Length: 284
Ligand SMILES: Cc1cc2nc3c(=O)[nH]c(=O)nc-3n(C[C@H](O)[C@H](O)[C@H](O)COP(=O)(O)OP(=O)(O)OC[C@H]3O[C@@H](n4cnc5c(N)ncnc54)[C@H](O)[C@@H]3O)c2cc1C
Image (cartoon, rainbow, N blue to C red; front, side, top):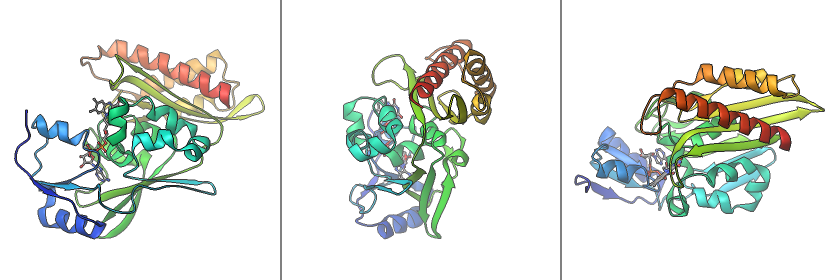
């Protein structure tokens, strides 16, 4: 299918973007890589009268690592993340997760900002950002705002971002400890049946802290505080991993679809989380 007719804009700066958003309200939408939005428009699931292309807007394509903080511009692509050596050294989980998104062609276009702003429960970066305790930076007519990734997602395609706000960057503390991003998908290029992001800090032989988030197992990403807590103070033995998996299963709420029935998704979620914990622990 082809999309309905729309007006196309390509402003050079953020002031230009904000003025078009202000003029057209929810009839206007920004586009980053277009690899989620354009298919939605072609399927007539998104009706966008005024399409604002962000490609020429300056200042959103940088990756900055200073001290303990990482800042990634919203227009940084998934390929940029994979290709950035300093970022891969500072936060290897970002590269590990980005490599599991779609395929190389999509990753050359798909952006961090589009992936986290989209609100699709199938996107991999929202759960990853919750695991990393990232902060989302938004700009709008009232200036700059920040929202924690863990507070951003309200329901499928519903987020804390207002229609007249643009997501400009994500920032996060440099992650410590061992990491793992595990994803089960039906084939290369597919969205997750279940995915798990895990970050574990070790103190001697004991787990000092653990952060766990799950993807595509509810209408939002699921940061499972209880799953992380089940590991803290343990040696991450089989009983502790079982307790973490049980806690995570209490937090997710999958629905049946073409990736399988609910019982299957819960089973896969458990297997994937167990793998993620074991790998993160072995790297901690
Ligand atoms: C075949 C295929 C397979 C895929 N598989 C996966 C997968 O396995 N995992 C995965 O995570 N993704 C997958 N994707 C999605 C891909 O990663 C997208 O590119 C990504 O989700 C959205 O990024 P984008 O830059 O293309 O955003 P766009 O499509 O341009 O925008 C998506 C939405 O976010 C909004 N938006 C974009 N940028 C901003 C911003 N800066 N501020 C505010 N709102 C903004 C847009 O208005 C739109 O509503 C797949 C896509 C395809 C086509």
